[in-house]
Image (cartoon, rainbow over all chains, first blue to last red; front, side):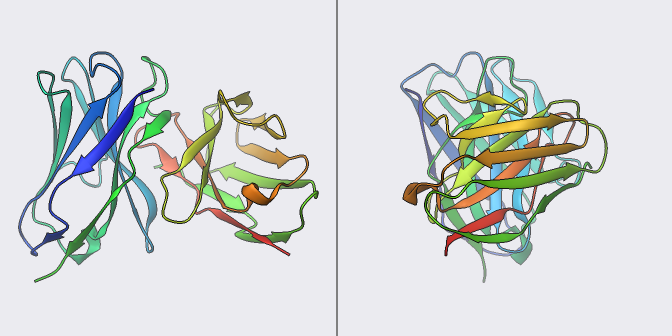
Length: 120
Length: 107
């Protein structure tokens, strides 16, 4: 059974870059779409973007200018960078995997989530 | 973006009740509709995908139906572990979007 675990700073200063890593265990990162999704009381569940094992990416249009998702197959990890953060980026951030290898946006497996707070 | 609207936003029910949650899309999404259950402090858990396919390991008391813009999630006989928040999600177009959630509470 695949397992995902987010890691990274829980506190980020305004205007800085949020960086998170998701470590995948119990399966290879090859194949599947790998997603980042966040959840805040104000905006609910919000899809940020994903990356295919080939390296191709899809981003939410509303965040595209600030988001980079990358893959490190040697470490079985993928990462999120979100630049120029504000308080509105405070949320629980989840990494997640597509249910099937062809699932662009159908998410079948989630990490436990990590709280990120943007504050000085 | 496609807007997903769930009703009701909250609901009180008793163990053994049958209940239905509705999700409406702002445009047709065929059957690219998924349902998730979320308990406090936990990640969402996939229940139903492609409108009516039951995810492996999910009890058969959960079922989904619909196509186009209108969808329903039905729980045939509520169990104590079913009290949670339920979200619909469209996976038809970029960006995939979620409903605002339906909070199911014990009456």
